[in-house]
Length: 163
Image 1 (tube, helix red, strand yellow):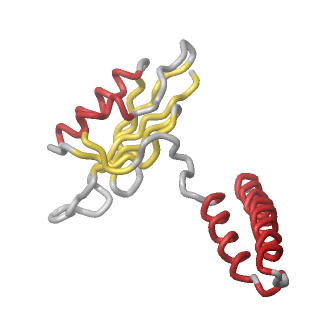
Image 2 (cartoon, one colour; image 1 turned 180 degrees about the horizontal axis):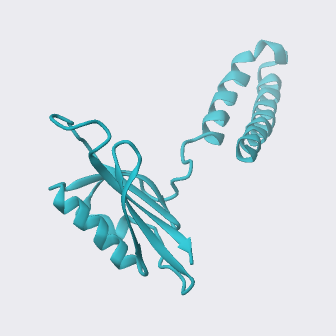
């Protein structure tokens, strides 16, 4: 909520400064009045809105489809401190957790991810969330023929937790 309000204020401030300055400069250069330059305000407003609200969301690291051989260099989950651990959950298609493991270092968590995808014979995966405290990685495509909906395992979620 506060992030949206902050981005809105950032957009309005940028729009006011840039379009006001540009339209004043254009009015001096062309000797026209400011209300004839509505397109300047619209153009600058669109550009500053797209800059202020560009996508990024929770995913600070690389997201999207990746090759699993590059997993170690792409994942941003940090090694847990002595009073933390990594909670590794195998997630079904329905979003329910099928199996949960607790590991105490980053390498073991990534090993669980690679084991999961090797059992699925997948070379690529889609990262939904990639932050220093959370990794959400799923199978790129599943056809679902011959299985019940929601019963199929789809991915792994690694989350840093306090002990």
